[in-house]
Image (cartoon, rainbow, N blue to C red; front, side, top):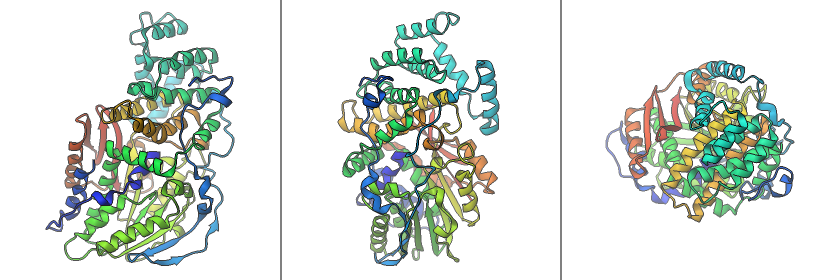
Length: 538
């Protein structure tokens, strides 16, 4: 999630207050908990090249070309540089790059002309990949049919009936079906209707509909790559982007939930260790580790020696304002303030390129690995024969970590064909937009910027792009379990104390949020929709 970096962009350390807690078994979780309470246009396929973009978002990393190299920098807790290797030019990452041509045909998501055979094949695929987790097609076909007076009137008649009733959700679904079937005439007709109904200042479905319409237009015109690149060339100023990310982090608990649960599992696993090495595969601003350093500082006796290896794609330098050395200096300064022995090792490299030599493994250190909102960006077997998603898990397992933490969006958009992927995206992001709606007024200019710059890009990428260019590839926890089991991991149960601590987080938010513990994992949802899942492995 692009917005998953927002927590690391906010300067939360000024707002964290920790009191010493007696007792070796509870100090970490009490310390981790104490911070939670305190935080609180017209579109036309024919001229799409000129007028398709209704959004004003994305990545202006071109100003930081100097950071597009593999580098390793080490810092100590006194802030000084311990070692620095010469930078080497790093070939652009073909799996995450958006700079090559988009070549998937609009009809590429069609499995068969026979709908019943399509459903049967989809169920077979789902049963193999996900078990009983999903039955998207039937459930949303029923949504489309619901309220239609004569289901047998034919496609055009049904669509006319839906338009007459003015259901934005059903018209979006009908338009997606037309795009999926490459029915250009129907799709353009429905897009004209949708333009009259969507608004970035309206209700949650109207706002989300504006961005989903963007993705539909791009896909129909086979210009997903162009649209996505356009979004990435109009990045707001770095300070503004950080502000949008920080606001989203404050008004929604998704990210706090994920990072608190990960830190809690690490704190518990390392409570008796004297030397701790944490590998963070998407460190961004590094703010996640502020609370953990403070918690370790309050440990009875003396704090452990902490070494963090921070991995991040060089493209993130824009949001960070520079290279990973910024993160190293910031965390080293904090650790010195709390008298915690500390080292920082940076690896400015894409996850697809990570090898064991980049991880600076040392004997005698207890290892923790953190995958927070990161793994879904790794291409799997459906994208590349290299299958970096599973390769990374096998690599980490070979390091014999004491704990591995995973936080991911609970959504199924990885291998799903376009139409069911559209349905899933509509359901998932509608819940997110609804949750934002209860906190920020609809005319709040910052809310519009948050949704455009932090969420819209994800939606467009999911809908308009295919192959290696589609980098937002979420999977349900059931599939992540299979991947971890195949890599040789076993579940590491989350502490009931950690879970109870995290549940107090929701006291500061709407009562429509819910936390549920299932099969050793923790889920955060909005009403009846799971949004984020957290679990641990060893």
